[in-house]
Image (cartoon, rainbow, N blue to C red):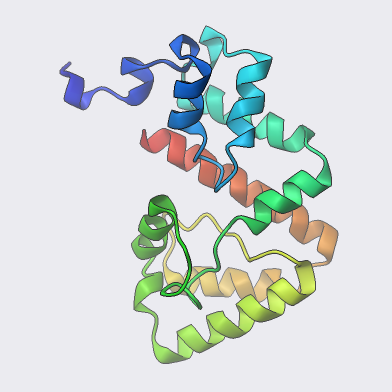
Length: 175
């Protein structure tokens, strides 16, 4: 196997990295929240975390063990979907993920509905709608948005955290 076809996990296993390298390579996995990687590193990176799935589970455990204020900050670090895509300060990963779902190609009606739902959702829950868009079309996402905006706050908070974990796992698998 050539180095160009090896994954990051094969060429630079997490358990072999110094803290600065680990945070540099994995601190972006949770949107604008390198604290997740910092805390995981402080707990210790053993060889059993040298796979995307294991690292995803360990990072999810850090988030799940965080206080609600930290979880809320993590949720608030995510961009709006579609409605303000052109104006948002998106990370390269978020931009690629949203484009892959066709969110940059919304019809005027879809764009208006996304904008309306984004505003309603943030007013109701205090954080942006989060959906792991990979593998979904914008119409699927809009349907989920329509359903989830009707959730109660606790249910939606938990769903948003679950979606953040899915995004992180997909990002790690892509490495």
